[in-house]
Image 1 (tube, helix red, strand yellow):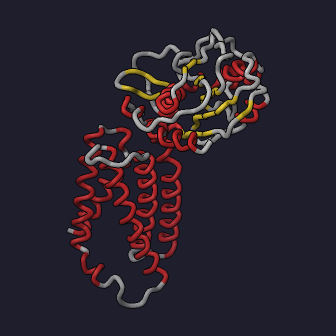
Image 2 (tube, helix red, strand yellow):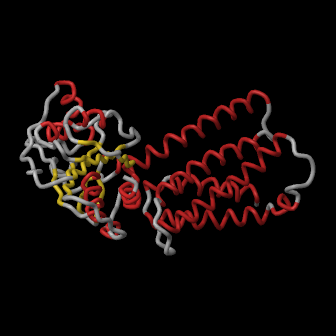
Image 3 (cartoon, one colour):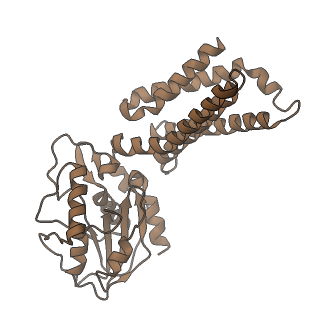
Length: 349
């Protein structure tokens, strides 16, 4: 009975990790089933807890106990964040998806360690060393593969509720300038709106990452919005766009812009852009080079997939005479929950 239960738990756990390829309802059902079997597993192994602190503690036992304790914390984090994502309770505003993903990685690594500890009871010698290496490879893979899968296979959905919340009053007139694939690309009706492609969905409407950030900034401080648009159209396939951007950097090409805003009346410019090839996109550089921002203050916000600011802040400084404020970087998957991040950034600016 115990072995059957343990095998079922393993199957459900790995099925839950495939959430990007299943429906939300299916993922929730798997999660509930897994949680119920975890409770059953602990009931069947209740004698373990009766003797939890008894006897001598050698290295193996310390590692085993610590792993189980941390695994329990991970399961709790998965449960709470999963319930928050499913709106089962009125959770405080937080980036629950990142918490859920982090907890999944954390518990996956601990699960492999737990399996390895118990495998040492049944396998010895070369087989055990091979099992150890395999466990290490699987644990490292979980750390890197799960965020990759989430980035490229999870459709990012958003709604207008994220625009609600506390507002700030800033001195001076504000212009919010952003550059996004949306507005510079002709997308087909069915396009993968994943964070890695800098896209998200509001119902069935495609929204660019930088575009969403611009709306969030406006919901906090007000101001006018201007979208940087190029005369040429970028490719709908993200990989092709990446190669086009690479050619622009190699050749030094500055894509022609459709128009430029009249910035004379504005005091503060919020500049929002994605990180392209670890630096500032060429259309944004062209905007800065051809817009007189002397005497203005620029507040840079960069969206990225792990590269932070890259070299983009230096590129901004080399392209304008404006004063540059302390910048803000936002990881692409964090955008739906980034209003609080932006709000606190401005409070501390």
